[in-house]
Image 1 (cartoon, one colour):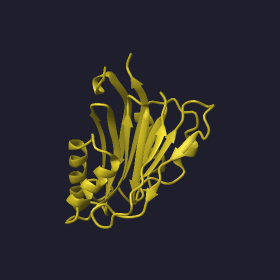
Image 2 (cartoon, helix red, strand yellow; image 1 turned 30 degrees about the vertical axis):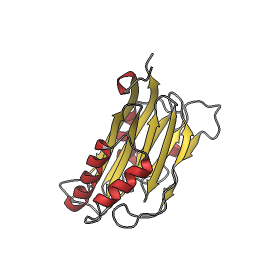
Image 3 (cartoon, one colour; image 1 turned 120 degrees about the horizontal axis):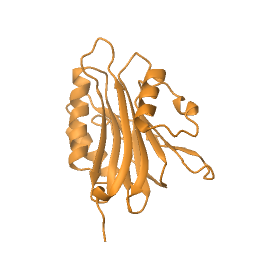
Image 4 (spheres, helix red, strand yellow; image 1 turned 90 degrees about the horizontal axis):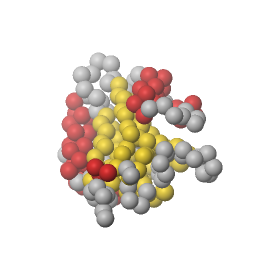
Length: 207
């Protein structure tokens, strides 16, 4: 029997910082369930302020509406809709809750890292392959990678308002995702750009 998102669980939290002097952040996130999985993503509108937010909002709406599509298809769809805007950079992960796999892809500089819950799995961390370009302006050749995931694995996306290397302080972390996201923003936010941290822990299908 095929089970949908009502039988699955993804524990997640998000934190964000708006650039001082601006009224709106250009960073957005997506956590959208579909029949056999969940789409997780972080989007950064180029620049900051209202124009960046406009592009990020358009991208977010598309991702919500077509979450069931592949990550490559989604990025292409967003690209076509954003040609008249500033554009965005974004990283997406589509999680298959039946097969326990994650397909992910990034265009631009939204970092993605997967922290393994099982200490016996090597490597203990995996990072998303980022392709240079701007969605809505210059789209590169798109290559998605597929990884097996397990209960307790933690996925973290951060926009470029977060300093590099934050994950080195996480270690074997059992904090709630929202607390992790808050700590990343408070301790590693650059203060010179919008910033967003999205943390999602995979729990999988309910019994």
